[in-house]
Image (cartoon, rainbow, N blue to C red):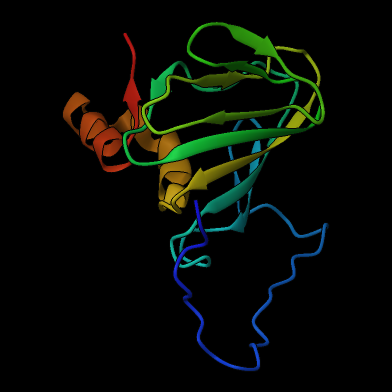
Length: 160
């Protein structure tokens, strides 16, 4: 495997880095109190990846088993314990643990610890996951057809 073709062809580099202080408020908060920090969106990385800090309160929460056809998803546990389903078993993770799920890989995550937990979610390539995160609370008011269209639009396929 080799490096990809250059995307930047300048001679002196650019002043283009971004900085996000630790105290920056989350971009989205769910009614449960869980929050999502948009650290690097697909738009801000030219579609290369998306990186989000997912902060969960002590109440059980998280999606059921599903897969994505066009994006991989990775999890890096920052604090607490998150149960991650790798398609075969539920793994009780701890800070520093990492799980990578390639395209098509069945996965799920839940905080069932009774304590807060926090992790980084990484998607590659950088799909517009912000619209997915922000649309989830509205699904209860949608028809079955609208929910199915939303999931298809956001490359999320649930297992029965």
